[in-house]
Length: 366
Image (tube, rainbow, N blue to C red; front, side, top):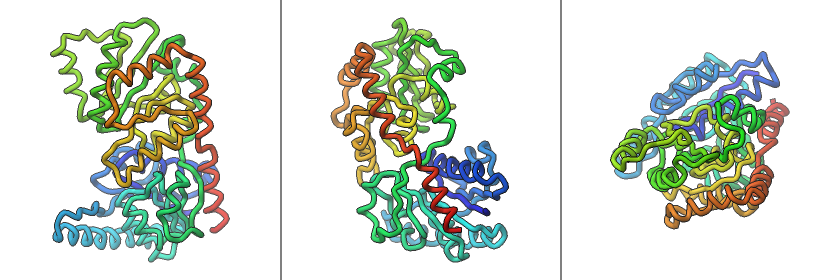
């Protein structure tokens, strides 16, 4: 099978695309797979490291602030589609699969024009503009959350699959991950992160949590600040004369995420679709703080899907305080039975069969 995968901008679009590519390669080792991305996205760094050939086309996000910017977006789509068509003619894919981000628009349009079977994966409970636009050009749309179905117009195209997660997240045990990372087996480990760039509000309350547990025996905090906030966080600690003890690890970027997630006991994070999927696959209790600045408030619904089943504590940013976060985290530390119950509930929300469903659906139509 000859396959083009595309998805760009953030890890939330890129890693599901890589997971799908990995599944195809696992099932059909002789398959030819090409990843198409965009110059401005993280994919140009992540994809080559994952072992896939990578090419770039022009893609632009839709800026509605001014008529000239709308025209500029349209020009970018036309240019990117022409570039993608050239790649299609050379590569001759059987299948083109998109996982979100504006780069999917020119690539899937070109794939449709070329005559390949085109597919789309929507990770969130509320689909973005690009994916709703692309509905008419694809054979099927795989849904990460069934709630997204009501926003599409062609229900016959929808496949309830769940969000694809890379195999490594299923394979690591807590003990093995701690051994690899050099963490103590008997510690209560908290993992806080706000994405690759960071989240200011999460960092504010996580900083106060850091002060509360700094130096505590058998407690660790891995504090993922994001690249935008790393230096500011270190400077804040210096200004407050905080001596950061060995039980606190401050990182600008959490990598490898599979090991850190497997090693921890509780997660504090945003509720992007990929973060939620990876956290539940690892069976981790979590405090989910949806970003209020996303289309259709989709992170709230991502978090609610897990919280309603007892696998997470949902705190909206407007209600988030340091006191509340510290109270919830320390309760889980001091009540291991509640932590275990939440972990089991989290695992019950995991999208175990997402990759099988996606691969089987595509394979039977080729």
